[in-house]
Image 1 (cartoon, chains in turn orange, cyan):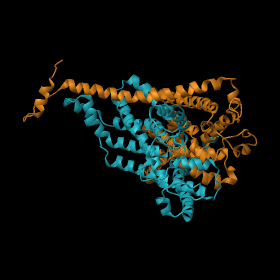
Image 2 (tube, chains in turn red, orange):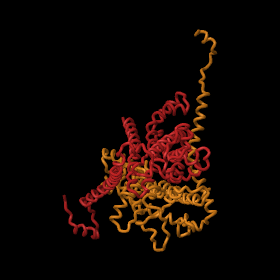
Image 3 (tube, rainbow over the protein chains, first blue to last red):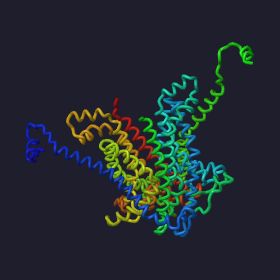
Image 4 (cartoon, rainbow over the protein chains, first blue to last red):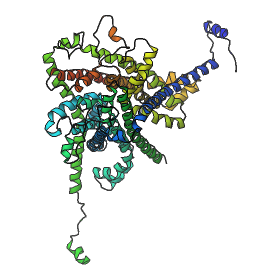
Length: 317
Length: 317
């Protein structure tokens, strides 16, 4: 290691004929500092994640597991110790199913249309720009749209502030995500497969249905699961369309239309309601509900990541 | 039998039965095309529903009052509609969020793409994705229950609901977005540029700062603007942690104090929606006027980002 005297450095810099100074020790030191700063940034993000999860677990765990599974099987109540998350949990499942039913066929269909049937047309470009814009629209704006369209204009069908309106809202919200995921998955399928199909005289739809779609399916599924996990964490648009916070019944399964048109609540909204109460007992309830919510989300995310890693490995093999 | 068949069939060329597949092709094309148009219909629906109610609003409240009133008190007996009260509060929380998310996000992106060993990267990326998947209501809980008490212990004069804690946690919430978009941009800079820099004798940090980052600049700035749009539209964190307190615009700038409670555009919409504002009441119209303002702001930011990315993109072969 060569030590460079600071005075020497100063003289060199101020001299009229500036001589090149490699000054490596100094530069390597800056390098290490920079790398440490970059690592620190990642660590801060992870530390916050750990603190967040830790705080929720410590606060909510005792509540969740006193008289287990009472917390999961009781309705919300004015008394914190008796309140549970049955109706929000069931509401979340209703919304998950409805959103999937509405958003997956339309999103995948639109993705197929844009990638396979209308690739590189003016229309596809227009829709692409439009989807880019939609992805940046705040979710609460979707809530306002839904309030106007699904709750007011379509009230005879949806029954106003109902599960059905909520499902339609979330489906619109995640539609752009599913479309983008579908397109990316389809783009990754080699075009030789399509050409082989065409050479055998199949139509475009037959090629897509029998050959392209099966290969792209894991990718589409990954994107779809991530989109759905975003949907069940949403709060703002559902507050806007008037999901209630105190529901002491479950939507009936038969007749189905009755269930679809009944009012509802979901886990994030129940959580929000409990957070905004001053008593600490309700905040313990909120933490316990968050544990349930995050468990569901983590399971969905883990499935998606697992699927993606597996397909990447297959592709690499 | 078989001889019979052979005789009865005229000796002509084989013709495939195409009717059915042609029909299904046509049906699929129209159906999926309609699904794709749904995204355009969503945009149109958002704009239409916002404009319809906003026009109704401006029939009651003059536009100048909306812009130039110094207070925001639409629920009072003597209402004032100075929307800039909400806009300033929104921009303040968003600025605090960005001052966390931009440095940490870009540094994380640099670490992930330039420094992290592949094995570590395989763990870090899903961890950041989990952070991105945490619902905003959980972030809001974390801000109110965990971060605010810490801030109160460190800084004098911090209220229970304050813009600072909401902004800081919102910064963590949008960090994964900024990080992953920046990483994509950095990843797109070709390896040959880095090798060229090393060949000139730069250290790793110098190559990153002088070659890689300028090459990825358009994407990184685009990521930051999108992060800003996300922060402006973020709802639950500010509603839970920053309270519902619109501050009048005073010459002493006390409304920009981050230690006190504020009301953003999104939290105002939530406040009114929770109160079950009757349709056609002025409150109902007000949330659409505020929603219109919010939508315009995020749209402008989005267009900015789009323009920036396209205008300053470095094209590599």
